[in-house]
Amino acid sequence: MSTADHSGLGHWKSQRLSSLLLVPLTLWLLWAGVALTGADYDSAVAFFRQPFHAAMALLTAGIMVYHAQGGIAVVCEDYVAHPGLQSALIWLTRLGCLAGFLATVYTIYVVWQGS
Amino acid sequence: MWLQTLMPEAITDVSKQPDPRPISPFLIGPYYRPQLTSMLSIASRLAGIFVTALTMPVMFLYLLAIAGGPESHARFVTLLGSLPGKAFCLVSLLCLCYHLANGIRHLVWDTGRAMSLKAIYGTGYLMLAGTCVLFALVLWRALA
View 1 (cartoon, each protein chain N blue to C red):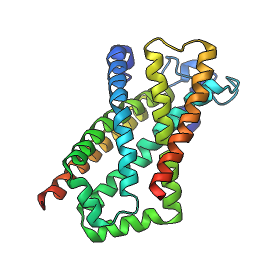
View 2: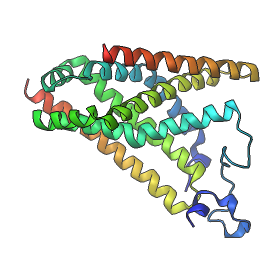
View 3: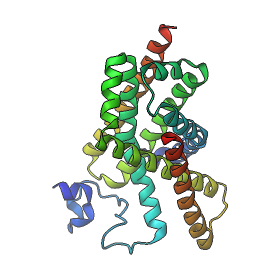
View 4: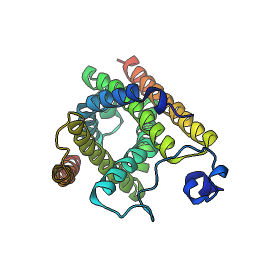
């Protein structure tokens, strides 16, 4: 059921690396949040058409989703003892994370198609 | 059953537990006295769970609303601008700031620094102050 007893160090390293990367990426996310607050459709599209912000959106979504599914897995392993429910929650999170990343890729693609 | 699934310590007969291996006890409850250290730690997990379960899905839906065109974007922005929408944004911002600040604290610990009890309390208060400053800064810039 859990993976921590088999690959604890690998998990620890990947969570450390992703959290290290997420320090600047989260600051970008907050910046983006500030820039997009009250933005109309045209300004929102213009924002994501800038190469820097498009790249940061993809990078942030990717690393964030990776870090989130790893974190939720640990919480589930710690607090959900029922093996079936535990893996169901972990895989549901992974599925949602993958969908979220694909949604980001899709939006950046759509926004850039018109340019 | 629901309680037993989440809290197998509640089952007195160990052999009836779903998995005989020990799991982490709850920090809130009869097991541990609430302390700043444990409360900041559990709050960091709660913030991470909130961001993953709610903030991230809303962010991805926002992106999809942009991909959907001006009408879907306008509908989504109206929803976010409502009172519950605004409250949600504020809680999301707080969770992100808190999880970021405590994450930096963890990264410092990972280098072996600030591990004494005194330092752990010190960085705890520093992290709380950092969270407030970042939260206020982002809010001020967003509303400006």
